[in-house]
Image (cartoon, rainbow, N blue to C red; front, side, top):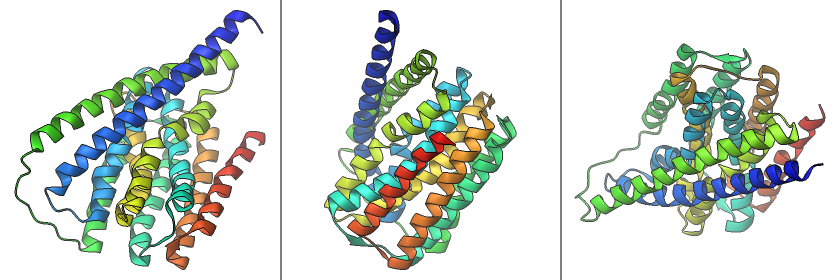
Length: 314
């Protein structure tokens, strides 16, 4: 292996790690201040997690989708989104149980939001298996998120009312905007690093995005949800973990091709998407049956994620 090749690989890894770190830090700040804004509307903790926090923590995937699609690298978009879904529904939930402690979940809430996550993922797999995401398909994927949120809100029948304005509301908006800018820069760095690593190591961009970037862009979810659990805001944690999967399956995958229709490696996308779907079914069924997230279920979820690496040998 030549010194130039080693140098390029090292630079690619450093760029990837640096971009992911910037994504995680910027997303944390953006979400923190976005939640303060949402709190002024007295949204229920579950809806804050589902809508505000999930969109905020999914900013890395959303910006990656637009950037990679614009550059003609659809595999980075879909690989990152499917990898994030798998990481969030297994690793994130597993780690917050192991590190944050056990807590109960409501069966009806998991059943409703979980069903919406499965529907969104089934729709995404059925589209990407064709190997091309057209603008019409992208519109359907993007529109699925607000439609599913409306369904969840109507089924759960959560009410909210406007509260008095926060005197620090402007500063929250400003700091959230700065955080979003940081996310955009981090996403740009990540995409370029993945392209460089794929070219130098001859590993398909899709696999690098699914196994490496997917975990990296799930760091905001892990940080936010673990903090929420330690503060006993369990509904925010569950709402974000599952809500982020809904965002990834629809909005994140679709927003890039909506602007720049793109191709994707159909076989890889179908295989990884179906595994993420199977993992989601197992995780959601376990939570519905047990009605709690403890260390035993957390360990099971992490093992399920580990099994995904067997796909490398298929």
